[in-house]
Length: 89
Image 1 (cartoon, rainbow, N blue to C red):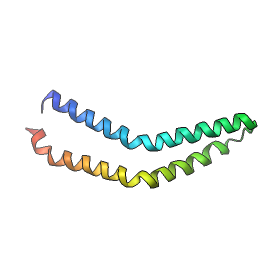
Image 2 (cartoon, rainbow, N blue to C red):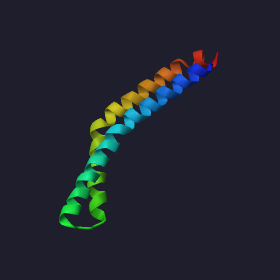
Image 3 (cartoon, helix red, strand yellow):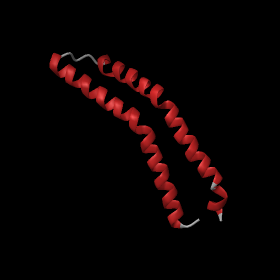
């Protein structure tokens, strides 16, 4: 396997990782920002108020985007395993 092949494989792995993580991280970021603005406006400093909405929102994002994430991972893994004999040469 050449250096360019290793770099291409690494780039594809990082790209698929970022694509899979983006929906849940984005939802968590948006909900966390909304809760922070709400806490700043109302001056409620309850610690559990920050975690519960984020957990619910990230769980919903996983339920909604989960099939797409799984399909993307399966496609990447199957392409990797199919091309494995070519990578060893």
